[in-house]
Length: 118
Image (tube, rainbow, N blue to C red; front, side, top):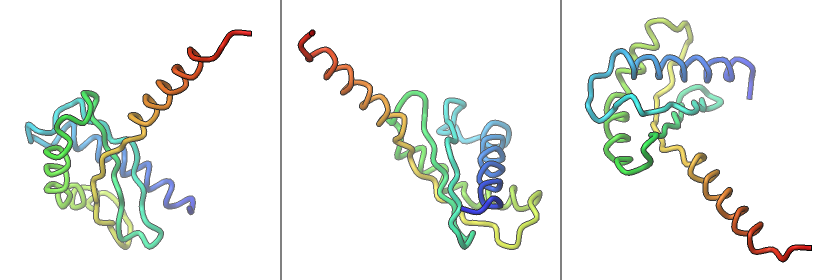
């Protein structure tokens, strides 16, 4: 991944987070929503935006539907202040890395507690 794409990933992550906090008025998108990562494709035409909610994935489908419906808004607002040739199309994806981490910790704890002591 090029240095430019890494910088744009960070910039878009911050911009989308700021827009969520200040501009979006959809009740499905509350303040417990977190933009964890942005991953722009090498051709810069698409970007996966990984999000999670602190309360878990209970309303995952509603949240993703609202975000993907607002993807054009995010793209337009970020394009206004970003000087790049191609503004990627944003695709919002549920981030499961936190859930995987919790699951992995649980499995490690189970293994540790079931080992015979020396």
